Amino acid sequence: MTSLLKFFIASCAIVAAGFQAEARMCDSTPVGEIPFRVAADNRIYVTASVNGADSLRFLVDTGASSIVLNTNSPKLKGFIMPGEPIENLGTSGENTVEYSHSNSIKIGTVQYSDAGCAHIPYPPEYWDGVFGLNGLSAFNVEINYDDLTIYCYPKERPAREPSASVALPFIYKYSVPFVCMQAKIADTVYDLTLEIDTGSDRVIDLNTPFVSRHNLLQTKTPFAVSRISSSDNESGELLNVMFDQVIVGPYIMPRVAGAFSTLTSGMQSKEDIDGMIGNNFLKRFNMFIDFSDNMIFLEPNNLFYTPFYDFLVAT
Image (cartoon, rainbow, N blue to C red; front, side, top):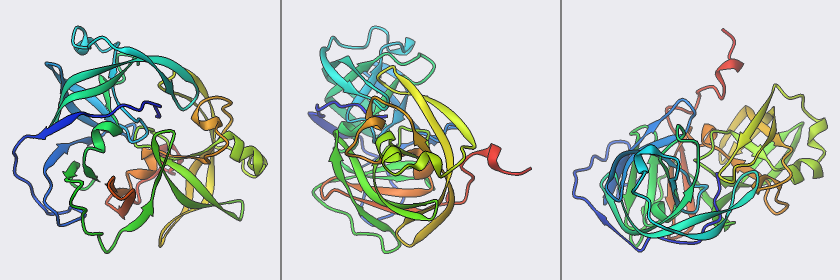
C-alpha cells in the first residue's frame, strides 16, 4: 500500500525498557522495541496511541511513505488535527488527502513528537492508522517474526551484517523502497525491480506494463482472480498464477503464488517498476532495514515453509 507523501518525523524519543538478544539478527543493542502480531491477512499490526487516543490498531507499512490516520476510525474521532491538502499515490490510483503536523504518537517503547500524518478515510473496520516510513526510518529497524518484535537501532551505529542473511541494496522510487530480485516464469528468468510492501497482504504482483511487455498473460492459467483496493479508494483486478521459482540469494523457492496485474492506474500501472512484494511473501524472512546505508537483510524464519494460501493445500 503506497502513499506518495514527502513529510517526515521531526523528533522522537525512546521510553526505557529491557531487551533480550535471543533471536535478533544483529548483536547491537536496540534502543526501542515494538511488539506486533501477524493477523490472518498476513500483515503486521501494532498498538499505538495518538494525540491522547489509546489502544489504536496500526498497520505496519513499508509501502507507505508516511504515518496515516484513518479519518473513519471511531477511536480517533476528535483526536485528528487539521491538515493541508497533498497528493496521494496508491496501488490502483491517485487522490488528494489531508496532512497534519505536530502529532504526538507512541508505538511500543518509541515516542514521536511533531510527527507528520496523512489523513485517509479507510473503512472503520480496517485499522485506526498506518505506521509508515517516516516513523520506521527514524531508526534502522529489524522486523523479527520469530520474536514478533520490531527492534529499533540507532542509525548512526550501523549493525553488523548477519552472516546467514541475504543482503539486498534498495533504492527509493515514489518515496518507497525497491529491491532487485529474480523470478522464473514459464521457463524464463526475469530480473525484477520490486517494491518492499509490508502493508500488502499479497505475495508478489507484477505490474501491468511488465506483464504486457513480456506477454505473460498467455503463459499461465490463473488459479484465482483477486480484486484489490488501496489508499486512493480505487480497485482493480489481479490474476493469481504460480511462478516457477523466486530466487532470494541462495534460496530458490519453487511454485510461488504470484500474480499478473491488469490495473491501468496507480502504482501497478507504472512503466518504470516491475511490481511489488507483499507481506504474504516477506513474512517468511526476518528483515533488517538499514536506512542509513539503504540495505535490506533477509533471513529465513519459522514461517518460511508455510503455505501461501490455505485453499491451495490438499486436505
